[in-house]
Amino acid sequence: MKPRIHPESRSVVFRDRAAGTAFLTRSTAHAPGTIEWEDGKTYPLVDVEISSASHPFYTGTARIVDSEGRVERFHRRYDR
Image (cartoon, rainbow, N blue to C red; front, top):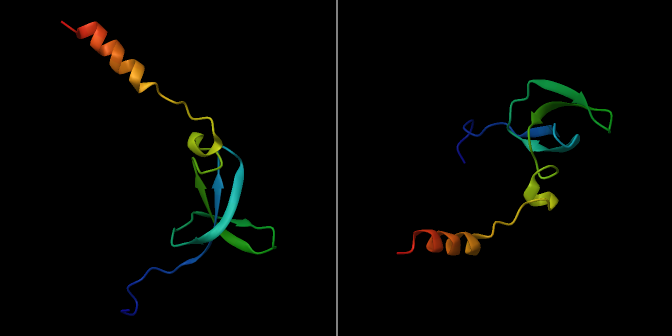
């Protein structure tokens, strides 16, 4: 690997604003703020609008679209 071309990876806290949850992971993201984590250390903080804690697909609240019914309705409406 070439030296000094890769971004620095460090521990960062991501906080989901919609669900009110936070998780600590490694990232290269630049964080505007800091937060004191459960271990007593201070980490950079990145606020995100949506994560797996609040996304409808992962929480099981996603709607299933009835595409077959829509196709039949289209054919009934525009069939000549």
